[in-house]
Length: 127
Image 1 (tube, rainbow, N blue to C red):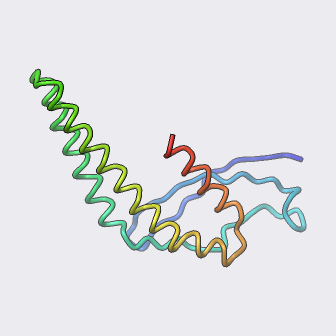
Image 2: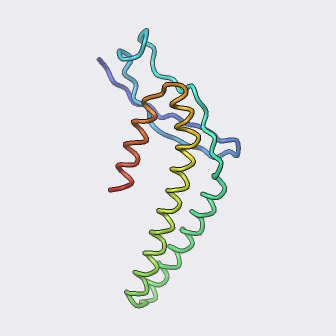
Image 3: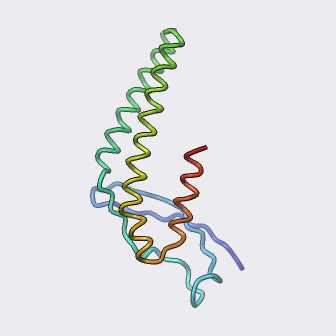
């Protein structure tokens, strides 16, 4: 039984590119055919996520300047905490969107691999 990984790309209607890796095990699929994605990903909050990420990046740049300027450590820590919260809230938006759209499509099409990928992603994010 051979396993192969390959990247898989989805392009949203707004042009946003989403990539992930599939693991193909041709012996475990009916008729020996490799897995194919039968659903499309619709992301309702792409623009909001990009705006949140842009703000977090700008905030990180200002924190970097604070460190370069020798600002008080407690001030830097407070700002880092704010960025951490912003990143976590951005992840919540992405997760909610993913569950409401991608996972619904995956369940409807019987794509059990997508559920396993989501579980693995959540495990990595929570660490």
